[in-house]
Image (cartoon, rainbow over all chains, first blue to last red; front, side, top):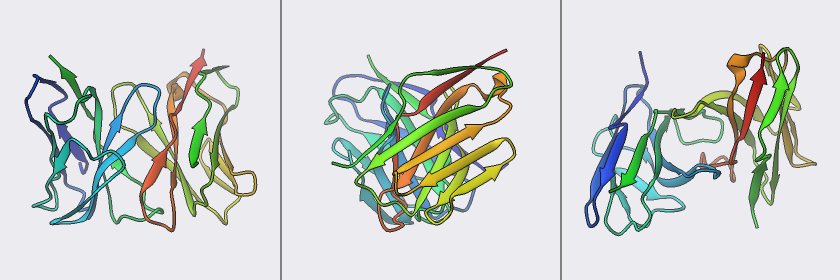
Length: 114
Length: 113
């Protein structure tokens, strides 16, 4: 079945540590996205990529970094500069980055601070 | 300022009734509006997309309306079932078909048998 796989499902970060969240898709989609979801808030866009080897900052990129070396993969690194990293992180993809394109989501990674 | 708002209070209805969820926005002129369903601990799942020149869109028991004058979308589930219990998110394309969606905070629907 085609879809998006995020791993791990749960992740714990120590102070001063960088952690990387994995996102893989086999939908052959060009566009990929990372969102952060906090209780009672809408999804907030962290980074997005319209095509391989290209990515752009979203609304809350500070303290995060990404890469897009392969079409199917879009890992997110939460750096020690992100002071409030505890959240539910969602990766998504769409065929193209257009408003008429549905986004397909993975089942998220929940990050907590030790 | 730009805002998208959904009713933050949970909606509780009886099985078989019609559920109506509201999505209001200000200072946007979206060409498209999307609705998603999210179950606890899972990612959102796309349900329906409606264009600015469409008044209404239907899919099985689901109906979405889009009033660009009122800046509002309504999402209806007819003949609701306990399995429809979830959080429903609206999302709009913030400008010019960029594909950069802005999401509402979601409304939780609870359908009681």
